[in-house]
Image (cartoon, rainbow, N blue to C red):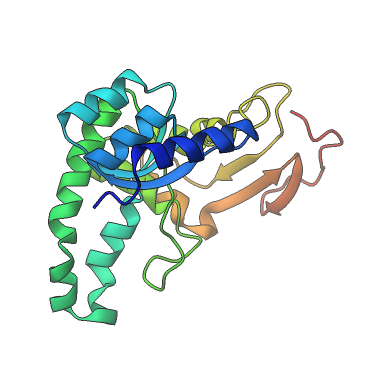
Amino acid sequence: MTLYTYKEVRAAAEEAHARGKRVYTHARSSDSVKYCIEAGVDIIGHADFINDEVFEMLVENKDKHFVVPALNWLVSTLEDGAKFFGQEAIDATGYKEGLEIALYNMRRLYEAGVRILPGGDYGFKWCPHGGYARDLEHFVKLVGMTPMDAIITATKYGGQIMEMEDEIGTIEVGKLADILVVDGNPLDDISVLQKHDKLNMIMKDGEYIVNSLEVSHSLQNPVA
């Protein structure tokens, strides 16, 4: 179901942009995603049931939009939802078929260079906050991203989606020193990023938040 008209979406986008704000929508159907593209919505949540026409529109406008498919919601609900609602209720959601459709569309969007990011629809018992790195594993194992491309979705694209690409997202001179040092190689096993005991050092703005390594000094300047 598409619950907003194009004019409503366009009005919301225009008013938000006039105030320097970005617009993030929940849009799953082809019509709703089409309205988002035509109205200039910045961030499109889900976009999982798009048809070929809307796929081509997203590809043509890939430098203007971000897609956040919220895959972990579907995966986690299929895996653990029956514990809370019963298997019959989970089967009735159609999520199994929905996940297959979502993965098909995310694969081709990724291959076409559309920016896909992790996150979305967390905060439930079976899909809790703090598990965001699981999306990266889904991107690699289910969507077919390379591990490095999956990491880029959460770092470089993360800076871009927040309009802070000049400050965060990549490790470069002049940017804030937000750095994660992992005991392991996520390029070999992307799931290592979900293991808290493997996160040996976390720096934010050049300050140590977590440090289990033999590094005792702190940066005087929070800019790398």
